[in-house]
Image (cartoon, rainbow, N blue to C red; front, side):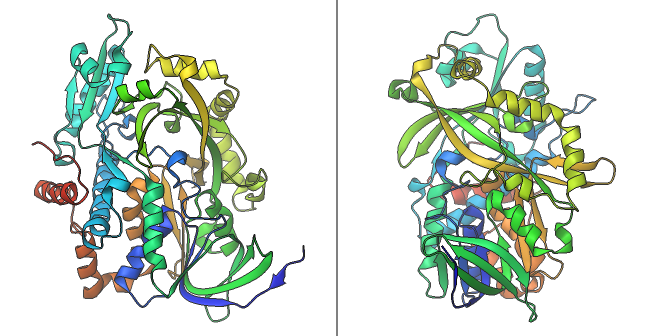
Length: 502
């Protein structure tokens, strides 16, 4: 059907993608400047349909309590703690903002999106046990990790994690850490609540079924976007002073279309995700924990296995994974041509170089993609020795696009974190990458605000408002233990979470 042209819409801000990142940035901006006009463009029929959807992500409140890949062991045997501390603090900042939304703005009931679920690390074998003990010692000295407990006592671990210990070799050396302050988060519910709040304003317009096809600078310095409405098949035009591209795996192609110099050399490596979902309600009742293990030697960080209690739409679930897969799609509901279409002159070499340096990753993904159900059950047996195949089914999770960027030494490197790419003049920003993603959304969006609204961020008005929304804003919980203690007291009250025992 031939496309038709429609009237251009104008606004101060355009947010591309209706996920957790756009929702967070939209609410922050509207709170900081109530007079801003905002347009949201989403290609699917509702908010939080891709990566922010509860079934498409781990649902873990990533705070580095149990994720062993955030604490790498150095050659001298010491433990790197910088990334873990950064992620732990970022999650506390997110909880502060969510407390503001729940307790002060009262736009969402915390019971609908966040629950206390203990976080555990579990390992076996002499070498891994030594690593976990050193990790515990390195982190426990910081207030952010006070309350973390360590044990090698099998009886204690069996009380904590009955499914994990039942049927296990009695002579196998095991160890575990526990953090009661852990959480399970339904980012889909949280995202939809924030969008409902945004849509309550007459000058905020959320448009679904809008597939953004192009964006370019207008002569007046604003951004001109062209979208295709998937329902009416009309071509629509939008203009804004500032654009945020928060479209998950779809961000890279749009960033490339912007032609900003800062986007040169960026590429993406797509990875699909899968889970085993427990169908046996009796088994689900026996487990109340998020248990993270250690990835096998040579496996990528994304392969860290975990046996997770989830609370989705008020119902307790149990998942194990993730199982990765090789794909060329950038979105779960994307095209198999996404990877090919993302290739450009400035990123071909970095992407080829990153591919050459990560051949084991490609091999790993292919091997994961061709696994049988019994192969996946065998992996689960390491965390649930008495597992029965018929109690579990495979479900497809979301797509992730890992960042590839230019590197002077290697030509191109594959990153497993998130990357904010901003235009020098602050009129456009895009978010690339995945983990830890949604859990640190508030810190990431504060980075966007600093990059793109630097003068406003220096103003007394914005500083005061940010302090109201995020009481620790401008300070460090890592360096100020009392600040961390006070922050957690507030958020545990507003979000109905377990109090930390110190």
